Image (cartoon, rainbow, N blue to C red; front, top):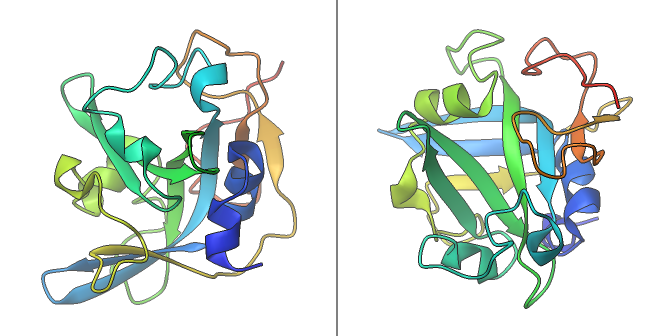
Length: 185
């Protein structure tokens, strides 16, 4: 399935399919590649944990763009978090990228991109990328096809209180880059 089709899926299916895909970051003349190993789905208006649950705001406007639009926000006054808009028109679902494994040649350690804040800090992803698209020509952050894992595990999302029992966290259990052990229901 093409990445454009993956991003047009509802958030849970898109999050599962993004495990194994590559983040490709152009940064100061270098290209860093990392394989996504952990992601969480947010269901838009039907999800009390989603930023758009109470409606559209200037900050969440990228989530109403076409699938593949980046939504980057600043949390706790110290971390950025990378989300990719998914689903279809008028359905602002998104996938939070929680962790990735740097590919050989990146110069990064195997756990350098473990956790959403660390991933954004190391790859220098901040709110200036919010609203950009992963398929735009010359994009500073792109998605590419990667190696699918043997298995994708599912658990509760991490660090939220509302709708916390929903099984919307997808991860590769064999990866040491996964940000936290599974949360049991």
